[in-house]
Image 1 (tube, rainbow, N blue to C red):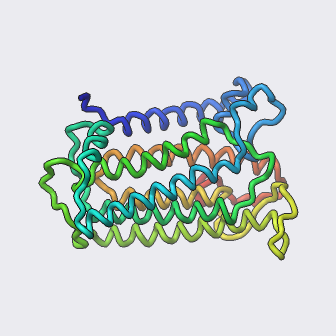
Image 2 (spheres, rainbow, N blue to C red):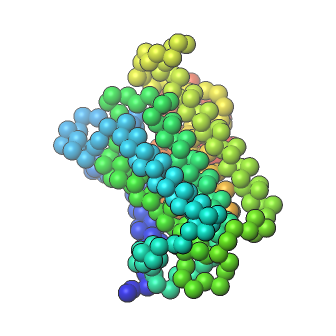
Length: 305
């Protein structure tokens, strides 16, 4: 069996692709074939009037699908970890085999069971809320589209998040010398601070989702428009994509909690590159579309960019 970590390889390719393609679009979009832009632009930013590329697009409302998937996957993962760590169920042999096939047979445990359990718990909390957001709060326009690649990446992302944690968790590595139980003393003050940052960003991301949804509703909650309106309030006072800023903060917090897990760093690099590029495109779209956008509003990092 080849000793390769396919999660690292896949997310390295994804990150490299988004950086290279994003850089090309940012600098030379008007000189590039439309298909390049179609890969990254979606929803309000997607190109219109290119019927030849319609077969590469699906409704933006299909975001719901991979958030349903992430909801079910994260719940299943958390329940499984609870059974193993708290109720002392044994890890099935086939799970070790699958993880060895994905991450290499010479995998090493780099994080404690406690850190992994906390990380999966927070990730599950996020997946559950995003499931609620997309199914019960967000208003998707009937004409909004996303690229099929973007759609498929949603499934890859959430699968990669869970697998990357398990690959380097003590209990899921054969013959590890680390403990196999939960020990809360494994956590430190920096982990507590990371949890606080995660929950703070989690709450603000929900606030932003509600603001965006309310732009298309009247005071009675009835949908009255699908037009794009310049949002204000909460973190929109500082950036054009506060939901992406919140996402970055949550994944940064998870990176602190899972520190030592090298595979997770590949996940974070992907999230960072993807969110920054999407935020830049969104910010430029706002500036082109609305003349009254606040001059001090940045793309994703307050007061910086």
